Length: 295
Length: 172
Image 1 (cartoon, rainbow over the protein chains, first blue to last red):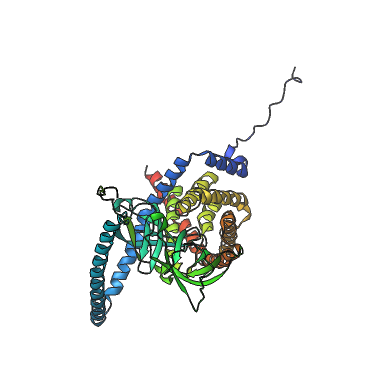
Image 2 (cartoon, rainbow over the protein chains, first blue to last red):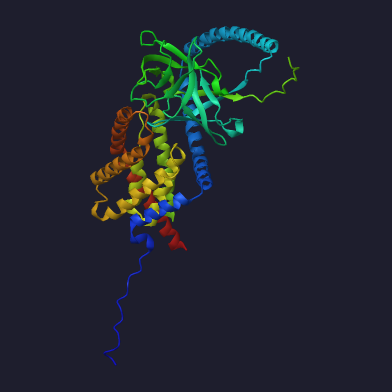
């Protein structure tokens, strides 16, 4: 009887599943992540962004404070000189504002006369740059204004040197702007004084060099070189960017591989890499259009 | 649990410091990637699950601020954590030179992993590598400079947390 009795098995140490095989664990996490609904992932991304938004904003405010104290260290003579220069700039701007008003009135008169639909109007929303993030794959900035300030996704962003980019993401108090130097940014442009559209795209920006972009589908008769650069401006197609805003300067144009068009290189404003303040062009609410009689 | 919370906060601090550094370097078109710093301490000193939480959290933090598929950094950091966790018995964890070497190799692997995932989207491969190689060099040099300090800071804070827990236990 004792011979038939089985000997008890040695106790097997309990191993949790996660300790069984790390790669299997990782595979399971990956599979679970793939199966997770997109809405949940979007919510998680927004939550993580908003969680760290105060850190970004606080760092930006501290930088502003540093600049403030640095400016306070300037001498009175320097401040007086700066004030004098500013007064000169202001007087020229006042003149430009008057000319602008006259031109707007002229445009409105022509629209009425020719029965054209009114041009899309924008209001400028100025915003400080909280963070710049320029990797090889993307070029983005975070600005200190967002949904609470009426910033919509897709709105164009400009600065004194021309186009900065387009609002890519909007959060409560911040917004992410994708720069025109970003390789994923593409928009229509025209050479100044020409009406034929050209495809502009951001490029991979080399280290220690100013930002750049590329143009494609350029007509063969347009000649551009470092000695004879051509100014590239927005075409205004699509209704996002108003026409005539500076994109950059075409400094090289070569025949493309298809032989039908040229492609080239665009030098962008070097200040794009050190932006501290930008303006978002927020589309104005459409006014009630007057009912016009059919011609 | 207290260790995990301390390290989660440290990850936010590291993310903020890297973001500030990249903000300052943007004028020179240089981008510092310090993914390994998020992963190495939890993998070498924490339990598997705790470390996985900390590394995953850091990855999702990076994902939220990058135009990549949400979860890319998270999964890569988790993978790096699990591989380092398996190898940690063979790594002298207290030796600064070993720490730096582990961080450098992990960072290289993460950097290549992330960029190889992005490579199919590249407009011109030659141009991409001309940009990525200086970025990698700058990142590795930065890590050589800060690794020992950052790991020591994490270690110090975790020990402070442990001491506080012990004292609270004794009082209770």
